[in-house]
Image (tube, rainbow, N blue to C red):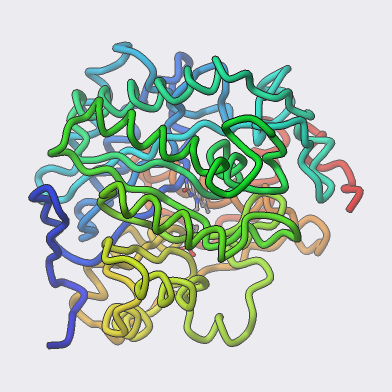
Length: 408
Ligand SMILES: Cc1cc2nc3c(=O)[nH]c(=O)nc-3n(C[C@H](O)[C@H](O)[C@H](O)COP(=O)(O)O)c2cc1C
């Protein structure tokens, strides 16, 4: 029988998702001065829930306030702000829509002005001309590694207590867990690095401690890179081995993405034309994963049309359609496509008129974040918002360092 976009799906642990639309994590930067969730988040998530998505993944929530990926991040590390977190979790409930929380530690992907001493598995700076924005990290001690493992568990238990329906481990996009998985970034020679099994130990310990803290009846997912798209980095072969290991632990949902700050494949940079035609950037990889494990899958990145989504679902390569940017300019796209599966969305390509400025990933991301902030204030998204708005916002939040010429 053909799968349609509005078919429900049963995950393990008696979790039912009402349709196949999975809103992927989009960092909202809507934390208040103390990094608690601002009420704008509830407004935004209510809007997304009304728009028809079955599952809403929050933007990355930090597990440690000393290590923020971005200035406006929300942090969940103790009982502070639990009431506000509860309101956020509750915002989608009217629409039978689940809100899960993505948990993250950025490792060394922390802009210099946010942290004087970032940490990582090893002393390896970010390359590809990012050295002026990110400091060289110091290597974590074993004691600190174990503390971070515990922190993931604490944050997951707090997310459950606040009313979130599940949690997701952010193991993708070059953040700390991804750094441990990468042979380029992890040069350790102790129990946490050296070969692929030891490199994935950190992730598995994080999962196990989270599972112990939330119990057996609560869903935990993971966002994992198909590859880092860097020479000598985390490869598809490495990724498949991680998929098998984490599936063996009974994880509930695997979301597939790819790339890091050094090579931003997650937002379609350097995608081959043949891939672009199938829309989703990581579908070929997902097809191989499907042969390996039975864990439910989400593929995120590039989906723009009902026909491509239906083809992907019916090929068996994915169970859910992960959507990021489309929902930042059309929060009710799922509703529209369920009513008319032949529909599609064209993403705007905001331009300043200067190619070198337009190529800056940081500005691209900031333009999308501005749309989230608009919706959080109860305003409609604005597809023709000037690209200069993201230039000014980035300047005021990150300073001129963000614009310095890159070395590579
Ligand atoms: C503004 C912005 C913020 C993002 N924040 C996160 C995040 O917090 N966590 C994450 O896993 N991915 C994040 N992503 C990546 C998206 O979840 C998604 O993988 C990517 O946008 C590709 O999907 P799309 O083509 O549907 O946009 C972000 C993307 C954008 C544009």
